[in-house]
Length: 111
Length: 119
Figure: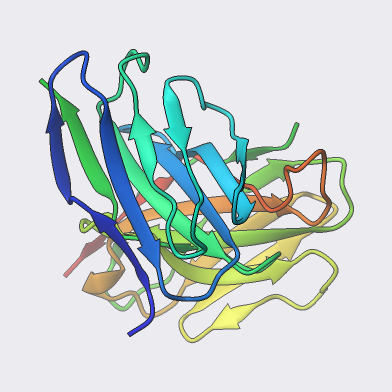
């Protein structure tokens, strides 16, 4: 089945540690996105990538980094510079202007 | 900058009844896309319906339909014959059809409306 997978589902991190969230898609979509969702809020864009080896900052990129070495993969690293990383993270992909499809998300908690 | 506003933080509907969720947006652009996404307790975001701004006809998907009023910048979602499985957060989203310095295709979300369905 085609779709977007994110792992892990739950992630716990100690303060000062970097962690990497995985996002893989087999939909052959060119564009991929990372969003952050906080309680009572909509989604906010962290980073996006429209082609391999290229990515752009979104609205809240500080403290995050990404890579796009393969079309299928768009991992997100939450660095120690991110002051409040506890949130729900959603990955999405799309073909051009068409609608975005989302993965199941990763819940990150900083201990 | 574009903004999306959902003025109803919570709504409730009786099973089998009809409910309408409101969404307004602010933009100076003439061409764009509007979406309604559903987020059930599993937190997976699911596309419900899409509307292209250049189309005057309102989009429909089974029990879901929209009332798109371009001049008023309004994009409401109507759910007919509500079912228990419709209970979720619903997010309205805007997407420009233009590219600005690489910002093509980014979704701008409202804060959501929590819909409860009573049996």
